[in-house]
Image 1 (cartoon, rainbow, N blue to C red):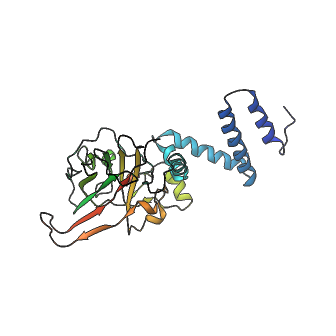
Image 2: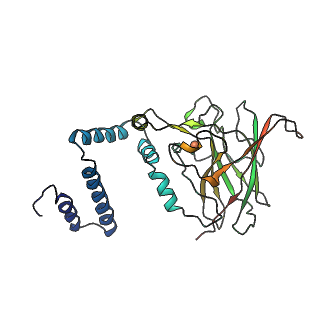
Image 3: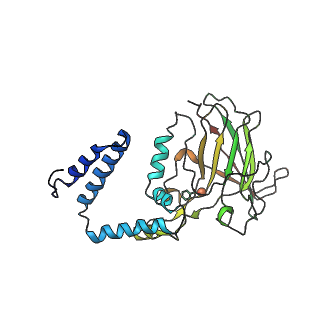
Length: 280
Ligand code: BEZ
Ligand code: FE
């Protein structure tokens, strides 16, 4: 081990990584230490600031489950990982983060049926098609869908909502089409009761996510797709705290002010087609 000075500190620490462990671990730790030392040098970090950072991380791990993931989301790491790990061919629907509110075991619901048990908002009739990149409809695709109620809460964290409210699984028909009845998704704040909330406040970042509906779509012979669809006109679209918004995932929601068949006005309609990536 060489004599350690401010100038040689990084090299001395990196040299220690030659002692063992897997090549991949060595690659990751070398980069992590190089960037961490670079950061400390670049901002001339004080000991007091470092201790504040450590206390922040301790608090992040202490009380609220999922707070570290929320930190990753808010630092844009989750979205970067998602983009790097789900590169899609041109024309295929873009992937997106799952977020913390998905639940296993949502009920299978019939085509066109309601995804909710309880909500007073005007109905939104949502439909579309699941297809391959060459346009072939995909029959029997499974769409696992979840969103907030019109009170801006997911059922998972809202005791006032009945079980399974605003979550359900639908299957595409022989023509690849799927449909369900919901209400317009609304914007909602990410959880801010923990350390991440304090950090957002400290750096003046917004906490409201633009309205969206989450989907996990799976079909034999295709890569599973997790994504979320946003609605045009939402004032929060340009400042999503977790960086999920993509142009290709924003759709129009049309308002209808006159009755159409058994659809009583006012009601809304929306369309989104999923283009699945063939399995590798
Ligand atoms: C969500 O869309 O459900 C979500 C994603 C990341 C952080 C918080 C919420
Ligand atoms: Fe969400």
